Length: 557
Image 1: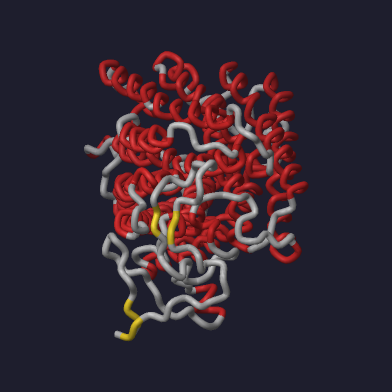
Image 2: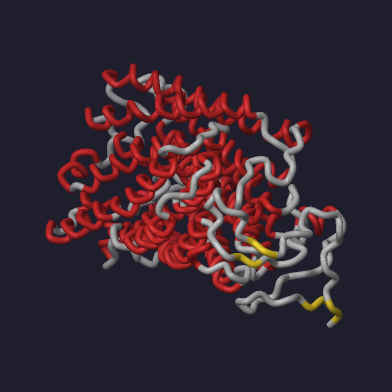
């Protein structure tokens, strides 16, 4: 058995022979890079399913009187769309996918701290997805992705399967959070202090405790809902001493931090891409890093702003309103730091850069409407309308997903050794950007005019704008499909990228593409941040990484 060298933090380097055979190498792999790609592929499949459900929603809303599907089917479709995008696409893609692919290499590690746990956490993910979609066989959930009681208590039998599936997703997320936290704390390369870590690593570092802490609240809520549905324990039944509001408190204590689970890794991606394509050091490195910590802490203090219409006492509404507005401050620090990074830079508008600038614009708009909704009087008017749908999609589709697409175009050469087609990429960006705004921007004024969300038929006065939204949703979908085609074609025919096509400075770009199994022949030493383009690379010990010499042979036990 091989004995690994030891990092400065004391965790083994995971030097072991590369597995042989397709099953060990690509299916039940313990290599963090393969696991990251597995997460991306699986999340991509679920994204296609969720996108198909979204188009079914838009087809229904083309006409005020519906007619494409029954109201009950419509309820099922939007419930499964939301559940899929949150738990089976965005969170696994940004944490398990890009986190596994990039983070260990950026800190100079050969793997994550617990490779076998990493593999188990991944395989929980597709099993959970299959469980969720098997609910269609017994009557799928239909109370929205939030599944509020008492509607969820009266739902079809598949609602219990929804509880079990999302509970399992949470188990896998908790494993990933623990694994990442230990990896970052204990396996950084010598000299890589916290204030020298790449900002993408900071994004994963702050997200990891959220995955571990917030998910437990959701797990408890899901277990209680399952137990009440199957065994009649009245957690949420007010006639027997329970409370439907208990679910809301437990659900949103998870789900508001979950918004930051879905956005903090994307913040990290943007913070890598802007300096690379602006050829400037990131402005306010420490402020960007520490503002992520502030966002994570404040994220646990604002959950009840989702409940202003639930009958909450007015004296409790005020602190949640103030805290929600305060969370805009660290977010604004990031936005102004990114703008200062771009200001005066020598900008190269690659596809990754376009998606990053699009992220900056759309997420900022989503954040501004979030400040509106933090105000109790405004929220009382807009809650339950399409204004909420617009705000949420500007944050998630315009923020998290746009960031993930930027990351895909940025790190695809590192994954495969080949370039994505930049012409197709730019077309995909403009289709997605135009389609996204055309779909969700009109929802703001539809909501303010009084159109409620989650309805299969609506007042005919709103039909024209709904038809416009449905047409633009097809444009948005075309952008996503073009990216999928670009990935599939480029994997076989794409131009070879070399090890560092972007002339980037973080550690993953200093080793071959695709990355070798062992990551580094010798663990490098770090003596500065990676963002100062006027200085030499801040690493020692990378001299042999791009040669054909084999990695060091581990000592015998």
